[in-house]
Length: 505
Image 1 (cartoon, one colour):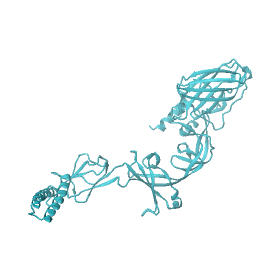
Image 2 (image 1 turned 120 degrees about the vertical axis):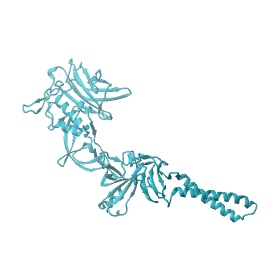
Image 3 (image 1 turned 180 degrees about the vertical axis):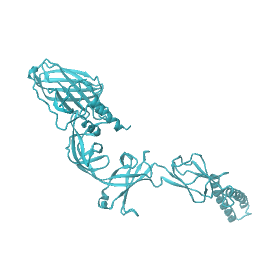
Image 4 (image 1 turned 135 degrees about the vertical axis):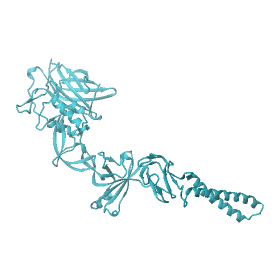
């Protein structure tokens, strides 16, 4: 079962099965749908934000001598929209600047705090709510708060839910993958979409060649495509046993005999040249022959065993291709295997000719491999732009653009990829994460937070996308708070006709 399916199940369970007491319970209109009239018309609700926290509180009207209960929900905005637990909440009520009353509360349920206030003076004032947790502190201020002299003075304001309003509780948001972010103007690039390939960087892949005729013997039994290897590991032995021609073992013995012969002659001439029995030219000739035979012999000695010619891995990496099987005959120069380091990768994006004029403006990119939903940035892989084509590639009529990246272990050599090529950033663009966008029959929507637990569906016109973010051309304004994770959960909540639960915990 996927995370998305589990999350949807949690949403439906919360919506249909919550047994909290009615606090702002929406009544049934007799047709099986929730009415927009809120039963407890006198209950207030306020949503406030700081850089770190969201405060959503519901409370009864403030009346002199009466106890008003505040239910405060605190959400951490910089920590995956999670509840702030184990904090001290200090509520201060000030009336006409004359008198302050303080109430302190700790959470009974993580993120939910109950504070009770009994006003002593009537009039206009403000409420300050200070949040303290260890060395962290934050503060919210509710201006224009009115304290009534008696219960009969409380005005019946008859709150109405806005048309199309969708309710999604804090408890639901805290237990699912959910997030809300304010949308701001920022720089964003024009994007050119292209397809391409993930390849090994030149020099990071090397061929292993047979340097002699013979039968290929594997050094280990489990040598297969994908096997990891270290530089200098013994991979194969090319055995010439049973061959009369080009037998490497015979070559080795011949080289050893020739080396011993030339060494003896050189050592003899060393003594004789001092006694002037041999000429200087004869001595130089024997020395040169000895040196040449030494190189030939020790080169073979290093790479030849009694079993045959030893073949080593030229670099660390893995077996990208295995071109022979054990017991197969290999001739001199034939390809035995290809080893790739899989460390540095070359990305090739094939750009259509129609973008030739803007090709020079490309400075960055994001890409999504065909086997993955993850979109990578060049920066996160410590990569860089290598080259932009000045001509059309042979046979495919596209202009290649190359990037170099460091493989984090998740890039697959040879895989195809979708590229989002970026030109120079342009300021003043309204940007949202791609995860915020919902498509329905070629129409595009996002969910905008109206208050702590209420949202509305908003149609938008999307522009360019780099696979991670996209530009919004119309439908949103800077500063609006958009659901960037869990948009499908809000959609599921909008389809339910079950009564909305309260916060009378």
